[in-house]
Amino acid sequence: RKLLHRQLAGERIIVVSNREPYIHIKNSERIEVHRPASGLVTAVEPVMRACSGTWIAHGSGSADRETVDRHDRVQVPPEQPEYTLRRFWLTREEENGYYFGFANEGLWPLCHIAHVRPIFRSSDWKQYTAINQRVADAVTEEAASDDPVVLVQDYHFALLPKMIRKTLPKATIITFWHIPWPNPESFGICPWHEELLKGLLGSTILGFHTPFHCKNFLETVDRCLETRIDHESSTISRDGNLTMVESYPISIQWPSPWQETQPTVLECRNAVRSSLGLAADHLIGLGVDRQDYTKGILERFRAVESMLKRHPEMAGRFTFIQIAAPTRSVLEDYRAFEDQVRDLAARINGRFSTGSWQPICLKAEYHDPEEVNRYYRAADVCMVTSLHDGMNLVAKEFVAARDDEQGVLVLSRFTGAAHELHEALIVNPYHIEQTADALYQALYMPDFEQRERMSSMRTLVRDFNIYRWAGRMLLDAARIRQREKLAMRIN
Ligand code: G6P
Image (cartoon, rainbow, N blue to C red; front, side, top):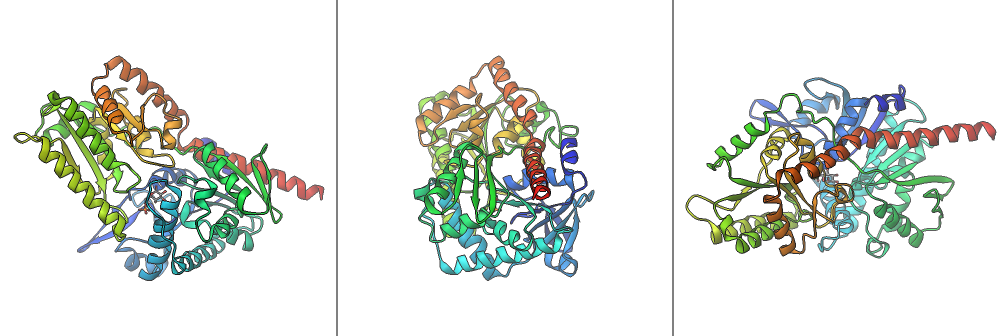
């Protein structure tokens, strides 16, 4: 946190993302504040609290329009305000085109290799472009100087950097792409791939989670645009603008926000088991995801099934709890996926359950982060089996929650997290039997081995926490600003 303050030295930063960090929901006369299930929000919120400034995001709660519309800025967090949240508003039609359509039916499947065919509609593209322009105007309004620091978040805003650059040529624009970047052949199928690349190249710095995603991006630019690429410094120059492409693996807050107040591991273990009517020594596996087809939830259930088939003695001794927050349910693919998750859990439960015991406990609803933290502390094994994922912060949250240095992480090799958390049991989630074996191994891993693995993963998450992520980007930005100032003086 201190490092961040030094780097910012009085600057007010502007963050832009689609998802807002606090959603105000009207529940009869009361207004409830929800924290959305979003890796991006989990990561960026502590940074914003440390830096202050303005966060521009889409207003999505039912109470927002009534309470905030008149003066569309609110101070948050509600309990102890530390920065300004400015919402932008979308009509149903705009949201369908920009968010559900182009961002989530086009770019999301385009960038995640999850074998879901992207859909590209000209009408969605039109909305996407218009909303990017609206947000660029909001950034210009919020800028207190002609060279603000703007942090642009994710695939909803690929066009924004170029648009901001047009009105604020001296701005330092740091764009972070939270999802994977595919190879040039895959990306090239998007009818507007050139516009997207040109938009992103308005950035001063463009960040990805892994060097592999950077490499894919550089290759895509090389294939599709006339630019000069310097591989040594990982920079791209185009139309007099220089963009540095770099990997910054995202992380989480450390120590965890509940460090002081959370119940002990034993209390969490007992509470979760007794709420399900299970014995104190009952083994628990855990999955925590948005119900998204990229997360490998079906593959994970099949691995549980395969494990139970091969180890029938585990019946009645092990339960897999899946917390699955509904997401983007307006889209057909997501609704169909929710049905598949429910049906598969029911089929597996039908096959193995005896008496009151069921192998899979599906909790298909939103859980707040503090509650999720208690499940992390109660579990023997956490399974992250994404088919493709930029980073996956559930893996890091599980590690951060385990100050008892116990618990085993089973982790898909197709996550960014697998490049850092080498002591997890790394699996290919498409290989059901291999994942089942890893689950079984995890359940019977000796305590000393759990401790060894967990403590080295904890050291990594502690040392490379979210402040380090933001700090590295801001430090690189500060160096570039300094260089530009010197260059101007020389000229
Ligand atoms: C991923 C994306 C984020 C997004 C989050 C939740 O982590 O990278 O941009 O906020 O999923 O999805 P949602 O569509 O609900 O914002």
